[in-house]
Length: 228
Length: 228
Image 1 (cartoon, rainbow over the protein chains, first blue to last red):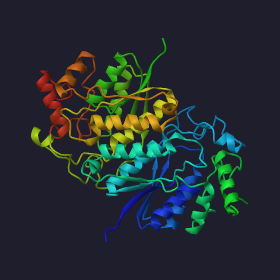
Image 2 (cartoon, chains in turn yellow, orange; image 1 turned 90 degrees about the vertical axis):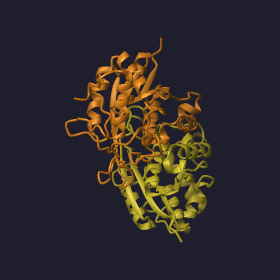
Image 3 (cartoon, rainbow over the protein chains, first blue to last red; image 1 turned 60 degrees about the vertical axis):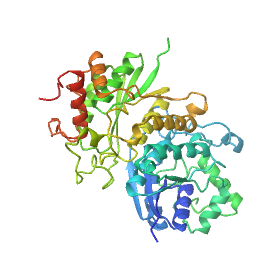
Image 4 (cartoon, chains in turn red, purple; image 1 turned 135 degrees about the vertical axis):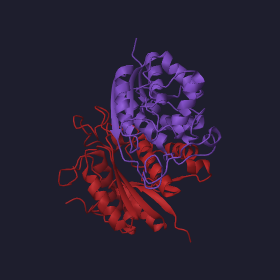
């Protein structure tokens, strides 16, 4: 049997950790890619390294680049306020200031470059369109457009080796993701979802990411081991 | 009149310098983006800064990231040989080892992120499908696929502000590009096309990029001021 290689985007949050565990469970030789692009929560990178090591990634690479454009996103510009204490309905409406322009396009591009270099035909991303923050680059039509781009824009594609994008969480609720993570043995105390954690990694409890995560644990009927 | 903003990818070579000059001539407030991704010829970045300053760019940003994956490309891995002294026919056939996996996807993604941050609706790239090295990510179908991706994957796109990709050199021969550059007053002695220049910036004269450039100047009937 020939080993199937995949690149898995790994931020250090609940969703991408679960996605990595799913790729490993499916039998992929999974190479985890973390991109430090100037987000406020750089603690994510440490968490990602820990998760890659414990979840069975074949390797872990960190690419650093500076996507901090002034005023572009509250996730990268500390002079902007991160929205807090929003209701479920508010979270479900519009695109919030935490949107980072073209972030997933950049992340998938870097994943594509590494995948082609490794001879990997599969690229995993932990986006979800349910219980999400409404980012346009988390939708199925975005992923389809990226697959098309990868097909026409790479040597592998032109030689008939199309890259497949996997988004195994796309139709799962946050509660489903929590259940899936626990089933796969992901240590959720390591995962960090908060947009603006304290310096020791404690979640703020009020940003959209914290609220979506809290609701997911509540609906799944589990305590979040990262709260305390 | 409202100023039209554009991002222009600027490597420091003949093609991208000419593209920047064209964007400025067309009246765009042109923001030049150079990506230092680990290419051998890092001298390009210095040349790009010089060109941005002299050609009228409104700003110049350099993003550094490490796209050096072992064995992936002779442009980023010094243990691989850069093809030399190839005939026109050899250059026109297949994809050479200087292909960097998904490079233009990464460059356009970074350009897209900055463009959306700036509120720019236009993104220029100096690719050409004539007298090119046969890279898949220089073809019109690749650019069309990227425009589609930008449309579905950004806030600007979902709000009806589609990003337009401009590739004004796509159908020009290298001789046409030399003529266009001279017409626009580009100082071609500053541009660096060589894949493996000496440390003082002298072109090798033998790589595909040197040979294509040499033929362009010869066909246009001009001396290359960067040789000598």
